Image (cartoon, rainbow, N blue to C red; front, side, top):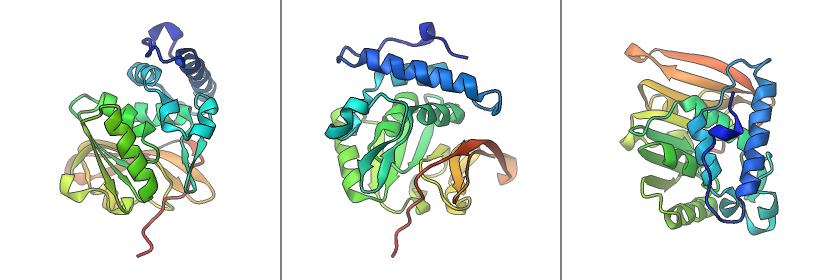
Amino acid sequence: MMTEASIAPGPNDGRAADRQRMLDEIIAIASESVENHPAVALDPGVLSVMRRVPRHEFVPGVRRHAAYRDSPLDIGDGQTISQPFMVALMTSLLHLKPSDRVLEIGTGCGYQTAILAELAGEVFTVEIVESLAKRAATMLKHMGYANVHTRIGDGNSGWPEAAPFDCIIVTAAPDRMPDAIVAQLKEGGRMVIPVGGNEQTLKVVTKQGGGQISEGDIMPVRFVPFTRDAG
């Protein structure tokens, strides 16, 4: 389990102490969770990145005071920015490498995208809510993430012309496993996704040789529903 000493220092933007408190809380939650959910483990590299990325920049102004609480926050249009613990866990479960090409379904405000961009080679991110997608794209460009590609559209289609991907992360919960997205996972790749309706489970999907799919359950979760284009 992680310790404070293993986390790299963050930027001098006046919120470093807030980020440290957030990370302390994330580590404490992981320590409490591992007894009942043994697959809960945090990657030191992910936590170091979260120590640097300014979450408050991605949060609407009226909620910036709460940006480093370990809780989801409303970002408008019926969507939320995920709980920091869940960002840390889902990113850790991807086992990202610097050469990886990642598909993210559900850009939201762009915070999770920024974490991925710090750790992977390229990030392709899809958001169905146009206003959110445009704000996120503007912020990510402003922060210098040249390895991020954004798209407005139905995430259920993924990004087929850029497939296959080493890793896929889905930040909203479909009722069932989305076959079209799974098909875009490279052999040997990993996907992290919440699945379910009233009862949701965070899952890790791996694609093995010959395209065989295996699923592992991590823990119960609560995400906003996966939104599809009504057309």
